[in-house]
Length: 88
Image 1: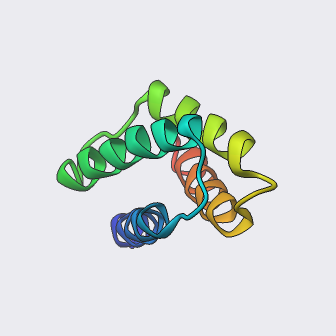
Image 2: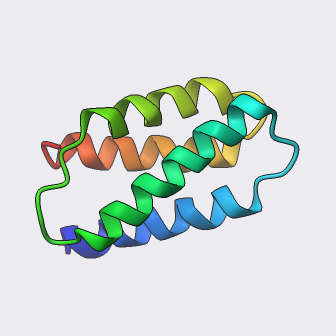
């Protein structure tokens, strides 16, 4: 179930990243990096996904989009919480 939940959260986040509108240059850079991380995590499904740079990008994304894109921020926050609870 944990792997399915992670896959669902990553795919939901990937869709929201694709649909994000009105994003500044810094936001686009964060979203590009996060999309690459998501792609990598989906490929490594079932293996150790510990990556400090991913967690830092998640935090940066939350900080950057907190006001302008609350739905995206909520999904990123849910993913980060899931990864923390999973010990990642």
